[in-house]
Length: 246
Image (tube, rainbow, N blue to C red; front, side, top):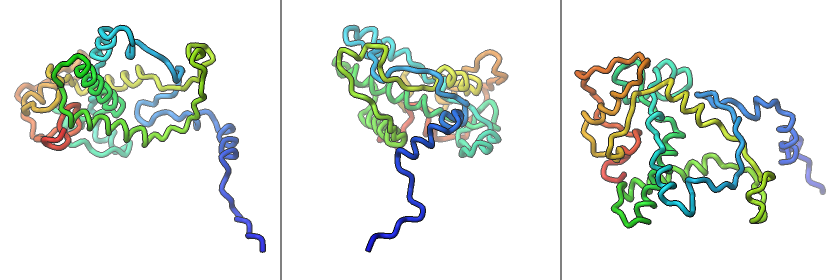
C-alpha cells in the first residue's frame, strides 16, 4: 500500500532558494540591529594582505600591533538597552550612571585575533609570552564558537592556483568596519587599554583610569574623586573571566 503523502511537505532547498531570490533586498540584507550596517563592501574570499605578508615579518607585526580595540568599549543608556532587548550592563559608566559599559562583539573578536597573533609572533621570535596560555586558549575557543554560531553556508568554489589573483574570483559582501567604528565613537566610554596590554592584574584604581580618556566634545566630565563600587570587570578586554584561569 503506498505511503500517504504529507499534506504539507517541507520546501526543498531549491524551493527555498527560489523563494529567497524573490525576497526584497532589505530582507536579504537587513540592517544590523545596533549600528544599522548593511553589506556594502565587496572583497574576494581568497586574498593575501600585508597582515599575512610572507616576506616581511616587520611589516606584518607592525600592522597587527596597530590594531586598536579601545573604541569597542562603549557606554549605552539603560533605556537604549531595554529598547533593544539587551541585558543591563553591571559595570556602570562612571561619568553618567544612567549608562552601562558594553563591549562590541566585533571588537572583542578582533582583540582575540590580535592576541593570538601576538602569541604566535612571540613564539616565532623566541620571546616570552605576554599572554597566559589560558588567555590564548580562551580567545581560540571564542573564535571557534563564533564560527559555529555563524554556520556560514556559502559554497566556496574551488579555483586553479594561478587564477586566485584574477578579477573573476568569488567575492563576498561585507559590512563596513568604519561604520562600526563610527557607531562606537558616537557612544564612547572614554576607554583606553593600559600600557601593559590589559591582561588582568590591574587594581581598581587603574581600571577606573581607563575610562578617563574622554574625547573633546563628548560632553562627559571626568571626576577624579569618583570611587567605583564595582569589584569585578568581567568582559573588558584582557580581564580574567575566571580568576586564575584566563
